[in-house]
Length: 221
Image (cartoon, rainbow, N blue to C red; front, side, top):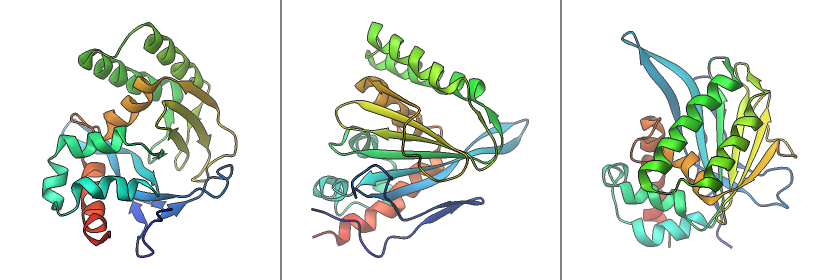
């Protein structure tokens, strides 16, 4: 089985620490390596306000899967390739996304923006139907009771078959039990698409993924 390189390092986003690897409590030893991490923010009245630090972890077998196609590409080539990020989003391996708050945020406010972005994307690419509408409704209900203080985290565990598990934590520790599970492949992929796809909410995250993965691909044999 492929494993993450021992030389892989963690990333600090503001005061948030994203370790090089994580092993979820209920994963039977399965580990994920940090593909990249970056800040998400908005420019408000001319000032860039940082709201969240996002880290994308990949199942270890993602490395050979991606390297087989992208080995030899430069960081600039990767960061400017829509297909590269699409391969991450749709790859046949699990992805674990951690979003930790730099500023406090209400769950209802957070999920309103995320769900709007997801619906907009799914409608644009023609994957939004009745099942997706129901999945969005469930997605919103999972988040509504939660408010996020500084340092608290949301986790999305995405399986290649389309299962999206959502967890909440007061810190950076991944809980053993998910707060909710949604079986919808289009929504599961779209959550990550809004973060690192063509119209990404976090360009910094895309740059981090490209800069960290390019040398890993080149060193992979």
